[in-house]
Image (cartoon, rainbow, N blue to C red):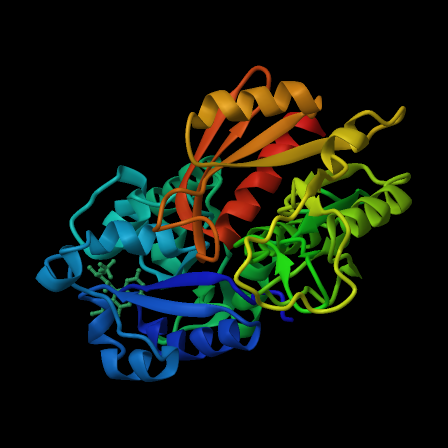
Length: 397
Ligand SMILES: Cc1cc2nc3c(=O)[nH]c(=O)nc-3n(C[C@H](O)[C@H](O)[C@H](O)COP(=O)(O)O)c2cc1C
């Protein structure tokens, strides 16, 4: 797994002679695992062709704010939501000024305004242009708004001048972007996450389970690892790839998951209960396959142990975060769970929606504490995972 695996990057290419380096920037980002989509300004297209960027990025190149097909689904908003990072390289003096002033006259400018992800700008221009008061002031303003500036290099320029203004090598740009994901927000922390569905045997062949895929838990695990946490995954039945950087322990049944969690919780700083644990298990599991008959079959269930509540009741409990998968009275049920379990936060998941939640790659959640409620609007589970980690770090650490 590379540092930019599962990361979506928009590369904005504006009208600088250094645009000839942009296909190589795409390649270097891809080398680190990123999925890249390119937005090309009209001036950018004077320096590099759409075809080159499309071929290298393996995605259509976006350039037209007035693309009727794309805008049927609000293309510029969808692009902004899709991106984990927007990188503008090369960034022309004009594009930099546009961003500072909030101009929204082309697709790149609109996408930037509609996004809430980190933005990187790699200015590239003639050394005298770069030194101009207005350009320097604009870059300072952007720095003050937490835009990451990748400074240009010193050297001989296309026009023959020597000075600051050359676009850095593509691999250096890609490395700078990658750093944003190693936030270090959970450095030194140990996190234990349960994920996936438990399986409760009925007989040697059949079982009782649920629709959880483990994708949300895995996305959270990826985000915790990215943020520097030592992460342990206690997983049931999942349809997601386990992050090789995590310590992983299988635990198929509710009883096994309870045991594994309790055996491993002592030195953990954070416990995230994302596993979909069966509330009931079958009493008297049949030793042999139950044969079909004309008679009604009655199974008896007993309540399983409450893992989240048990961890919350530990003397020296970690920070405890639960998930509430609800289909009705969403907020009321989630608030009750927060109170009854005694946890620090509950992440509410509306699993009645067909367009997100169970099995889906997207989700929308409400992060609830006793005092606050933060909505994280529908997005990929990867992005949600990172948002949740940010909220945990900001509110509790
Ligand atoms: C040959 C040529 C090279 C240029 N190189 C640069 C450059 O390296 N950096 C820059 O900021 N502007 C450069 N410009 C000017 C921009 O292309 C111009 O300001 C344009 O409006 C930028 O549009 P955009 O920001 O929407 O892409 C150059 C113009 C020409 C004609």
